[in-house]
Amino acid sequence: MESRRIIIFDTTLRDGEQSPGASLDVQQKLMIAHQLARLNVDVIEAGFPVSSPAQFEAVKLIAEKVEGPTVAGLARAVAMDIDRCWEALKNAKKPRIHTFIGTSTVHIEKKFRKSEDEILEMARQAVKRARSYCDDVEFSPEDSARTGKAFLFRIIEAAIDAGATVINVPDTVGYSFPAEFGNLIDEIFKKVPNMHNAILSVHCHNDLGLAVANSLAAIANGAQQVECTINGIGERAGNASLEEIVMALKVRKDEFKADTGIQTEEIYRTSKMVSHQTGIMVQPNKAIVGANAFAHESGIHQDAVLKDKNTYEIMTPESVGLSSNKIVLGRHSGRHGLKSRLETLGYNLSPAELNLAYEQFLKIADKKKEVFDDDLEAMIESDIYKGKKIIELNYFHISSGNHLVPTATVGLSVEGVAYQEAACGDGPVDAAFNAIDRVTRLSVQLEDYQLHSVTSGKNALGEVIVKIANNGFQITGHGASTDVIEASIKAYLDAINRLMIKLRKSNDHN
Image (cartoon, rainbow, N blue to C red; front, side):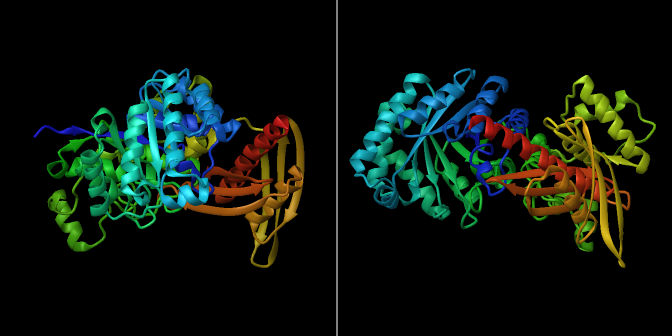
């Protein structure tokens, strides 16, 4: 039997970004979109253009700059949303308007307070309007899994008649079980007379931990497209995990007779980038991309794997992009060697960025005997791929001990003007943050602070992720250094810089 090609629709930048605290700025979204193109996803859902100026700008930029995948934008089934969506997408080589409306009884009665016929007509008009702009239109009957089947079949048929080329069946609240959801997909093919004129897609949420299982059940019953996110991030408990679906189809091709066009060797790097940019860490036991996914501690397991990896590994680490080469570069390595290794890792830097990267690399190499790929990636993400800096760190000094009041002095440049402040705190990091706050005079709430070791050993690079809140904005910042206090200060200043840019843009719009 010939293998079916499953379309991978990635919604990391739209539904994934709706994870609490995962807000991305425009440049972060563009960076991830370029990596999704390298991963070779078929469709990138870049955002919800009507929801904010930043969302519109991100979708527009991705549509203009990212080549390869179809670029989709989300729109409610109202004219204003669809028009705004097209404005953002119109320069894409392969644009798609994705419009949706709630169809379950609770949505119709409580959210819309309309009749089924009124909802059906809104869907029909929305698809027609979207189709007047482009030939690729996706329609989603939101909360399909809890929608009465008779109405679900009727609205799908009407949407296809109106010009929808893709019908997406969302389990919006993660309510279904795999057998139940698989049967629903099978029934849609059998009961909707024009279903053969459109692609059938599924979009599963993970409220009961079944998003991937439900997606695979849908594929087994004929679904041609799956909507998913990197690391399974998204609303509430998240979405179906792209890497789990893709590798399940690859490892169990005998069962599904289906595959994807995903460059699986890019999976791990994409996972790391999304985790870093959103500030949402991947749990160690996460399938495919977790730190323990290919780790073996049991002596019996270790012995067996050393004899034959197939004993306890159903896929190779290399198949998802984990490198078997650990030591990369040292203090005697040159600029060309660094450039070559960074390109292998997927970073194509400008000459100015390479110069800065080389300076940062030498600082790390002076402190570490061995520089690993993970060190390089943390360095690039924390020090090179940054937006505009309003505030920069000149120096810091810490006084701390078990019988001393922790005190920090920081020297900062704010748009070229030097400032120095000192403050006390509950610890050296808190003291440094308080000193920075005295310079910025911003009332910032620290909502989360994470510190983890990028690599092993006493000279390991420490990576810090902070989340701050101010004036309705929630911002993530990153920093990396062999000195965890320096990494913390870098992360806090990164978040402060992003916050100040957002505040300025907000004031400009007002």
